Image 1 (cartoon, rainbow, N blue to C red):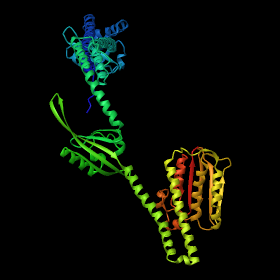
Image 2 (cartoon, rainbow, N blue to C red):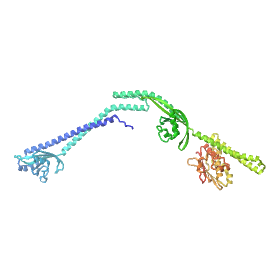
Image 3 (cartoon, helix red, strand yellow):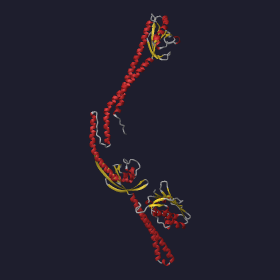
Image 4 (cartoon, rainbow, N blue to C red):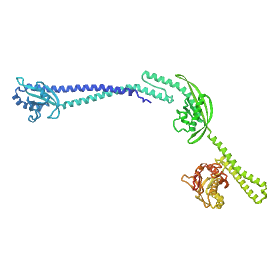
Amino acid sequence: MKTKSRSIVSYLLPPMVLLFIILAGSVAFFSYRNLSSLLYSEYYNRLESTAAVLQAALPDTSDELRRYAPQVCTEFGKKQEIRLTFISPDGTVFADTHENPSAMENHATRVEIRQALNGEDAFSLRESPTLSIPMLYHGTPLRNSDGKIIAVLRSSIPARRIESLLGSAALSIALITAVLLLFSVLAMVLVSRKITVPLSRIAKYASSYGEFDFSQSVKAEGPREIVTTANALQKMARALTSRIGKVSSQKQELEAILTGMNEGVIVLDHNLVITELNPAAVKLINYSSEPIIGKSLIQVMRNTDIDNFALETLTAKAVRQSSFVIAVEGEQKHLQINAATIEAVLEGVYGRNEIQRLVLVLNDITHLKRLENIRKEFVANVSHELKTPITSIGGFVETLLDGAIEDKDTAQRFLHIIHNQVDRLGNIIEDLLTLSRLEQNEGGQGITFEQIELINPVQEAVSMCRRKASENSIEIRVDCETGLEIYGNSRLIGQAVFNLLNNAVKYCPEQSVVQVKGERDADGQVRLAVRDNGPGIPEADRSRIFERFYRVEKARSRDAGGTGLGLAIVKHIMITHGGSVELESGDSAGTSFLLRFPA
């Protein structure tokens, strides 16, 4: 699992910021708390001092106090923010600076009143039921000359004044704390950059060295330890430059050799896991998954015979050769594999390390096998095609020599058959020579090409087939666009069209219609289609109809005088012209061949 890298600042900044926040928060908290305590004490002292001054000036009898208290409240309320309230021992309010006493409820249950009636000075902070705002209260018992409590003097002041002062103080404390915190963090970042900047520069150079770029020299300033590290890195880079240059040169030479080889090369370790392979091997085995390196041989090749062959060669530490057949995309490939074991000793930091490798060299001999099969099949087909008329000629000649020549009618019939068989031999030989010339000259060298109208060779081919078509009551219809020109050889194109028409006339029933249509498609290519309504070509035979000597109905083809080379000649004529021939349809409804000429 790859670990995400972090900078020095990212390591130092969070804990240091947290520490600064804790320290600044602690200082701000205790400052705010002390200021709050100080303000509340100040206001409580103010209330207490006010009460003490008034207590000394008030009369000490109940009746006089009740007469004098409203006057005191009236005069005092005009000059001071402090509220005064006089309460009798039973809790009844008889004078107040801010409210009508008769409208005020009984105050016997108030905390500060209860404590004052008990003979103690009392303080409290609560919301006033009358004014509905937080208030600071101070209650003082008023006594007569005998020491009896005759009333309670309560002084109070709104707490919003204190809260406003505390809010302003808190904002000032917060701003000062934030500024101090910001300066502290900036100072720490500036100090850390003295370390991180040269280290980042060294890391940049090291990254360049990792990409084999040794063109830059390490330049670092800062603490002595960092400069020492930079010098050591520069020294290591100079040493690696020389060694990597040699290794790279050797590797490039080896890669050039392997890439230029047509043979596939696969290198396996002692566990038959692929460690190296060249492009030819990748193309040869056509493995769909990526990457191939790191996978086992059996996983990539999927052939137990090859895997066993490699394992036996590696175990025996020998050099062996064998041939195998593998399936690639549904096709059979023939491989010739040469295997050799390689042993080497590597010197490392941990001592000597012995390694064992197996090198497989793969040669694709599928084409050779296919050519060999084609050659064998061609020889067999030629021998069979030539043997049939020769045997027939020999039999009839022998019959004539045995006396049949004396019978004029029989001799005439036999000689006519011999003549037909000789013509068939000539046709086979002529078609073989034509096909050979076309195969050897698929590039068109030595063949005259010119701009011709397609209708001309088509009409020549139709005229050559017209008599035979008439004998079979077959109509040939030609539909070719006027001025449809192609670049080619008129004689060869005429032969290709003749071969297609000749086949159509041979196999179509009487009263059939053979259509020849020429046109130019949207891509500029010229298309010539030859369609008939004959018996069609079975699906099993469609892939092989362009092979030499291949016949769908062998007996009928020979009786009709066919050589089995007509469609093969058509195919090679189109290849010579840079075009193609396709079986467009071939079911029971008829057959359609399409000739495509390049634009």
